[in-house]
Image (tube, rainbow, N blue to C red; front, side):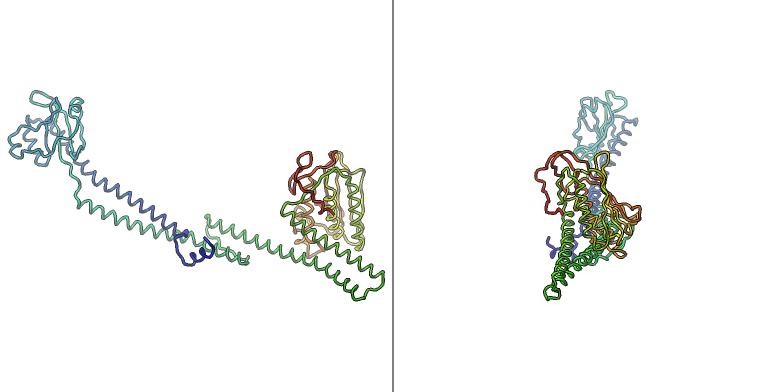
Length: 506
């Protein structure tokens, strides 16, 4: 169903497709079905009970005839039974049932009041067991006589026509059942409506709140009432809305930070290019200085744009690395030299302390990207005149431990474990110190995971921050490619179809 049609149906209040309507219909159908079943059972009992009662009466009468000391033929007993509509039969050893040869009975009525039922009298005589039942609309009771003789047959049989309950009785019972069923259905519909209203009212508030959030009002919340499943849904909805509101606030702050980071170098570039164009800067030395400043700012812009591209790739899991046995000492020295040149204008020296021959199984380009990010953060955090240290040493197992240590204000102990979350440190410290875009450390962590490099943040001895890396030992082979970000290094040769992202190396 299309959205306009669904909206129109909801506004019209039609319950045909609503949860409330379905609940009401379901409960009404169930109650109506139960009422119908009870009616059928009741009418069956109404039809069955008279026959059962007649059968018991005949059994009692047959017991009285069989045990009474009456003569044969029992004319008096037969006459008394006929007066209540019951016919007495004498059953011989051959299984034939005959009426008593009494003048009084014949004078009263020549025809039998009830026929002999269609039962196997021969077998009944042979078994000699008392039995009763209803067969072909005739209730009967069979009783063997205690003593049989020449004049006494082996058994007697009483028969009585089993008439159906009167139509008046059935009609009365049926009307009462119908009335009771209608009352039950009406009561069920009312109860179902109230229950459905109680269940669907919170859902309606959730729908309204969800639409409000969809229109941009992330401060919308719903009341959490009770402790049932609907209350749990409302509580989960509020948690979701709070998370969305927090995420939107972080995105706005992030965009504001990125905008500021972009605006500063663009303003500088614009100012110097205007000075060059209008002739304000005319000496060769000044023109060269302006061009160098413009070049530096464009490099800053390029790094920021690359951070944004790397972040987008990080979200799609498209970082790829090409792992080789590399001379990481050379990579470390190059990164320290480049960072020293960039930080020279701020008066922050970059020192190196590299011990021995350093080789590891990494992607040199990606490792350089990691070091550039860490060194830029360190030189930005350290005050002028306080050096940043890049140190590395080979460990006995062949791995290489490297560290970038600054002498800045440091990071709180509770924040160190979340240092690599995107934008976390930026949101925590942007008001108290100079910070970057909030993307670099998240990219660093993703690259380290892709290369199988362990990284952690800790407090430095001098009060600053140290980022330590553990590079895996060399494997003695030329080239090996891993999968994408977050996948551990597996296999012993180049993975077919794995892209090598050379353009992202810096």
